[in-house]
Figure (tube, rainbow, N blue to C red):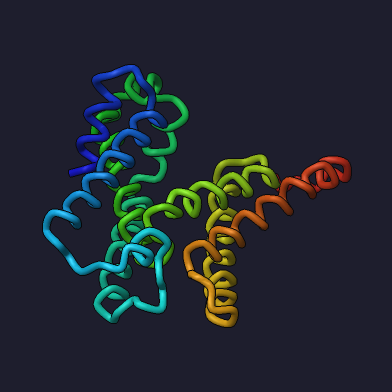
Length: 203
């Protein structure tokens, strides 16, 4: 529902995708806390905000596995169309691609990814785990497909390393994963000049 509402705002206004995502995210974030207060639901707000992977149940793992399978399968089936639409929406429309469908499909995939990440990294840091690995990958590669693979690798390293660090040092899992991702970004940023100088940017 959120993805459809977000797509409606993007399509019918000129405020931009980033602003639309910010509006929807903050609005539903506030709505969730109001509902928790009104309905007197017993929820650990710290875990909700910053995540607690050690509290993940077997059912949660099963749900995350299903969501991941749906996202990966959808990307595999519509990767070329989504890629074309992302870089050239007008060209995709000229080629008779259903751009409205692709737009909503991408937003739904994004929403499912966020839902699957909430338990581990929490509401506040879920966007950082989506954006930081991708930004770090963009610093060390020239091509979009390579950046996707490297971004997935950076995200996996951040999650695993952050989990181990949070376990051994008794730290919240979400912020620790996000900090590891930030560390990877800083290393990518610092090494970019060296890679460019030696012409080692991955092509």
